[in-house]
Length: 471
Image 1 (cartoon, helix red, strand yellow):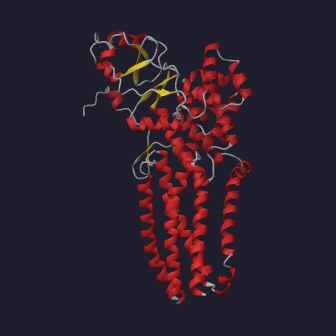
Image 2: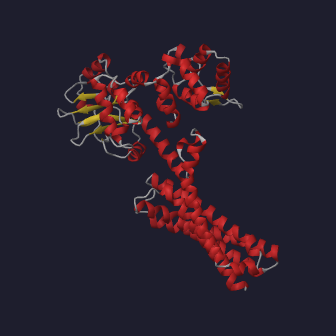
Image 3: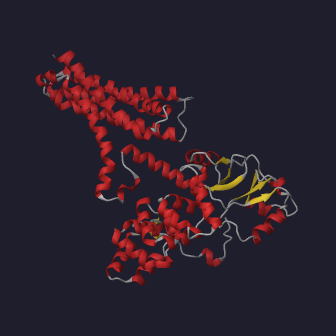
């Protein structure tokens, strides 16, 4: 491939750092954090500003998140008017609240007006009403209306995600007129990938990638070179997860957003969709663990209060499992070996169920698991659970037989393990499917139900079979 960049640009150094094994790493190097902390201890404001200011906005955000509250305040004060507004969208919500409070309403109002509209709306909507009022009082009327309107769209929808700056080209224009407009207009977005062709009613009827516009002949009409099938219009109310799936499915770089009348009102770009995909995946992962995104940066009391409800639910499920064990108290009293082996059955079931559950929740989120293929997937998981159950039943049965010199005990734990692994595999797929159909987020509630099923079925199968065959 021929490198068409200018020589000085082609030889420009990469911002990446080199890892221990010579591999490039684009993460914030720990040495930079240590250097900033040392500058803070020396009260060297100029040194702090120099160390932080030369970083990319995303790296500045990582640096602020790595510091404690007092050090963070020192860095913000050292940067003063040089604080880059592009840093704010990258910050964790908890840290961002601290930084916004440190900046003050005057500085924040200026920063919002310097950001793209999608980032400005995202930050503005996250403020409390009092802070919003103070910010709006310091903004021009037109920009004030844009922020207020953007904040009215429901969180997690295309309306909240979109950028209002969009390149719309009348369908009657030629390619030459379009290129001349792009070169002379002062109010275009900083970055754009597609040109949207609109009819006289301002409804998008096609799209032209900027690369195609540059390669087309000047006299050609944009309506002749536009692509109508490639354009996928997004309603204002579409959920951001569906928007992300649309981009993934069709490999889009951007998509127009339309109002109820079908008029072009904004655009969603792939960089925002990447954030949505990351956010949705992270959200599901955190929900499965019963924690939240801000736990890393919240104080001890806030984090404790946030985790208590999840632990309380798990306590209730543990009590249910204990009640099942209590039904077999006399059996346990007579055969002590059961108490030794009992946790193995429940643990194996829990782990097997979690494997299936993880796959199912992801498949539902990616729309790979639907009513059309649910029966086939359920059947497959039951077969997988049966095979794994049989394999580990043979292993654990032999161990129990040799350990306690009781062949019947080996058969009992082997049979119980088969039953529990089949139940775990079935529950791991059926529970999230059922919750999805009931309009309940499977990532939130699935783990609780799965743990209950595997514990209860495991204890019931093992102790019940032991009661039948060993007493």
